[in-house]
Amino acid sequence: MRIAIVDESGLRATILEEGLREAGFDDIHVVAPTGAFVARIERLAPDVVLMDLGTPSRDTLEEMLLVSKALARPIAMFVDESDDMMIGAAIDAGVSAYVVDGLRKERVKPILELAVRRFNAFAGLRAELEEARSALADRKKIERAKIILMESRNMPEAEAYALIRSTAMNQGRRIVDVADAIVTAADLIGGRA
Amino acid sequence: MIPVAATFVPLTDSAILIAAHRLGFAAEAGIDLTLMRERSWATVRDRLLYGQVQVAHLLAPLALAVTLGIGHPAVALAAPFKLGMNGNALTLSSELAAALDPVARNRVDDPVATAHDLAAAIGLHRRKPILGIVHRYSSHALTLRYWLGFAGIDPDRDLQLRVLPPSAMVEALAAGEIDGFIAGEPWSSVAVEEGLGEIVAFTSNIWGRSVEKVLAMREDWAEANPDTVDRLLRALDRAAAWCEDPANAAELAAMLSDPEVIGEPAHLIERALAGRMALSRGGEIVDSPDFLMLHREAANFPWRSQALWIYSQFVRWKFVAPNPAAEARAARLFRSDIYRRALAGGATPLPGASLKVEGALAVPTGAGSDRGTLTLGPDRFFDGRIFDPVDIEAYLRSFKMA
Image (tube, rainbow over all chains, first blue to last red; front, side, top):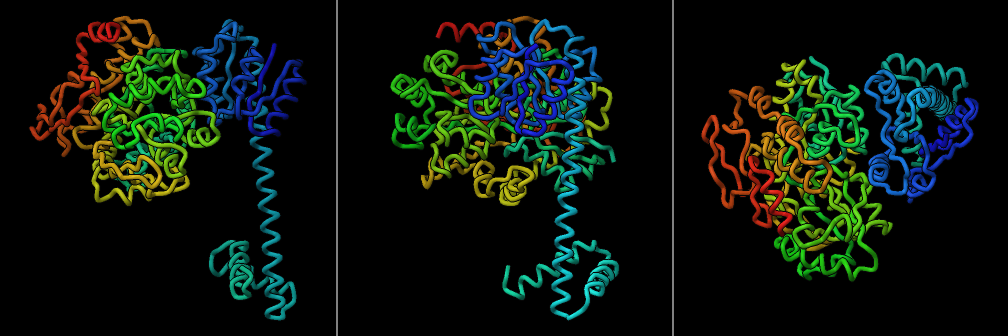
């Protein structure tokens, strides 16, 4: 079974491809949804196309699937009315799938379920990365604010941090927001902005 | 508050939904409206069909395709409220536009001559022209096909129609992937402003009162939640009246220019809202008050005859085989009954009929309504054809003879 993965995210495509290979599928092609990607898919003539639901190029792909004369068997969006739950889960996870006409449901189902799991895993991973990235940025900002206070008011580090924290508590703001205000003010006054 | 989730596509005619949300019309009607932006119509369709959202800003022909089950298992949709009339423009690359009348405004004013000029230019172009459309089942595609067909251009043979999301048209034109496109605003104005192309036709000059986007929902959801639907329609009616008022055009344009809505400059968005279109960069401004209509002349009323016109074009272009069941289904897509139920006793006049002959009005004409204050503007098709919904077969025969 030939599977095409259309995806902008290299990482997500990799995660999905790995999962499919582990499940025993080996004819997998990753295509970025840019330029003449539709012509590439037409040439590949896959049995299943997996695609990020939110990709703007979906309308372009669906049009090709509808009118292509090169594809021996038409491909339609995988919608089996008896299985709304699975489609709902796919849409929630941001997966859209297209399969060739006549492909049995039992053969498609594990692929779709795997795609849903991997898309969800990727979304979780991205949220974690985002969190870690913003935590790092926050720490750097607080560090700079501390240094500004230490230099300008000649106070030790612990005291500088305590001042930021108590200001935040008194004003009902987040520590990082107070730090941000200090850094912005210092940049403006110091002429570095 | 009743929660209702809606999708919209970044286009000027998402205005009514955006205003209903941001100006509190929805909240005043007891609706907690949340909006989700999507760039592909396929995703709008999927979110609507699988219940992630209850209502959607949708292409009227796509609502019909879903209802008839073209390329997809059929799911009955209901469209009780149109989100506007007209509003699309055809933009051609400067190179292709140069083959038409040198006076830009003559092109939009005379769609007959422009269609013939374009027909002559196609064979001389360095390649078979590629025109971007937003969807196979879009009013844009149907209007373009109708206009090209008049000049003897076979849109499936003489040129290539390529489907692209509206917001991707400008980039595709810049990259030379397409030679022009038909899309809702502000995308033509953005292309014009970047000097990539020139507007050569307004859909409002091809069909004076053309059917465009609708508020679509699953029919089963609409039947199960009549109170929610009525509240939502009342909110949208008030929002539409606000959006239509020229005094609000600048504020509305600013609202739509938000990066989370359309994300293009307000002065470009305002052109369609004010009906003052620039056809080329730095060129003359053309007054076209009917370019986009959001509320006046019962713009939101879902005339069943307009759904039937879409059906007639589906048959004409062989998207569907003619059959009485599909015709009946098409007539039922536009729910003038729900519109009337929701807006009964309000300020907006309700037409007395649900069907009309489309394209028959050459001058503003009074129409029967509950309050006798409804005037419908000229709704002519540019070729003078008249669509009588009771005899679609005869209408379709007239195209074959031409």
